[in-house]
View 1: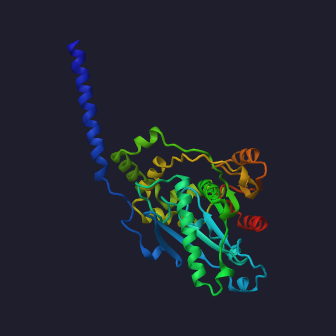
View 2: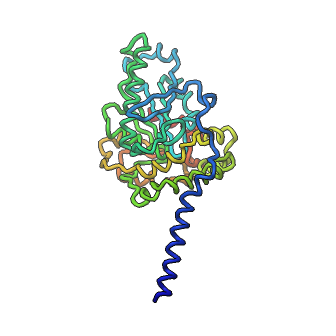
View 3: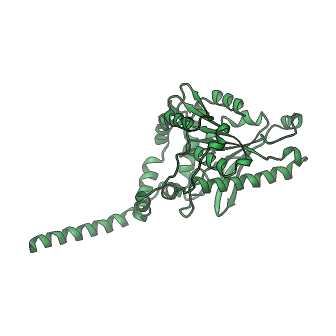
Length: 341
């Protein structure tokens, strides 16, 4: 019996020693990422604001002046479009869609979702769809005021309603925005994504809260995952085709620039719980889903289930498309947007 107790004691102390070493060791490895964002990599129209202690990076694209001055309608309720990217994306995702919209007279707002791009990556904020919905409505309200102040005729340029376009993870936030503020929502377009209901991190949240584990993940991610080669592979899967170098760089750049991005993603995994019950029956007539036929990330069956639950919603399939149809099949995508609004 004593021999057994001594053996168990040795195992216990060995495990404690190993645990301490593994908890200290990751801090001796450097993070292969820059300490702060180089302003030279930002876009010419990059803007930053702080709303409810969350820093947001966004970009505004104004419509062609000719369209605004020759438009016959007295209403500008259809002039605002907010576009929300998905997981690992940023405002670059919509670069093939903006011109088509501004040429038709729309103000277009692109925003980096918290934890991605050049927006906040704090570990202390909520990443729930409801919280992000509140942030983005406040952002749009501020933008609307600025547009009115700059316009010569505030009645003509006043934006009362916004079209909400969300890709993948961003689709859930777009729906949360519409649910939260239906009177200011016009059309809702979900691209390869839909609201999945309540999200709770559960046990994973407690595990990811342990700082040394977070540091190990940061070390691995910044040294082995955040590279052009890895993002080329990642995009190849999302696109269902080989991406060009410009697209790889567009996605990879924020990951190279911000040392807090891994920590932000892990915080999102922990703090994405949404206790607000949402039903979209009253909104379903406004909802259109656009799906790639060959989407490997979020299969079109997800969209089919959504329209089965909400039969007044419409599902459009882009033949040959993958998860990012707004990029790989932008011509077909832009035509669909024109049919929708």
